[in-house]
Length: 256
Image (tube, rainbow, N blue to C red):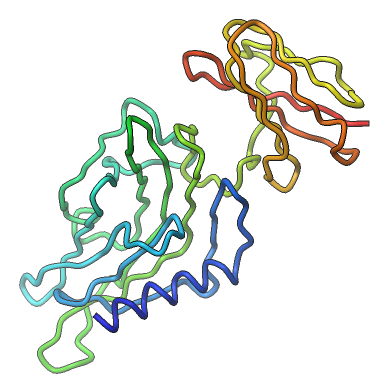
């Protein structure tokens, strides 16, 4: 138990010290990669959403002198299989979500991507991890078989039902204006204060700055919605718009 607590604390401290967080998004690129030697009785426990609770852990079982890895998730969490490709949207209907223990990357693989989903009260929160293990099991102690497990990167979004992509590192990472498929418009642009969102069944408009920080929010239900950015510094912002069906589009706005 002492080793498990130490592992969790080490991960949490690294999470805080290596990469800055925002209120809505947690991301870390471990440098060096976080590592733990895992055996059948000593797992690698992870707290992905920084709430000081174990969310998932890696363990394994011995077969023919090797430790075959397995993934476990805490109650309320699921992981997806097949494993997501780069930029896969984690709330896609095509992903298969699993709550039960399953062989980790076919047991023999040494690099993998895990999409994570937490459910509570009919809503979902998403995250992802990139992890790998030594290709050859080692026996540093007599009679003990295990593998070194490494966590390369991980992220978690604390906005419910947000369409997080695998590999996304911030709320504005890779976001481009979606004018071609947008269901809403924003005006005036540039603006010195109020931004008016116009469309059908607009429910929410969130404004993010270039540091991925959510700096303004407006909610409603109708064809127009206004959000006030008059007190924000001059610069470029992203307006993330959500309609009644949960669809999202993004517009870039210049604040003068």
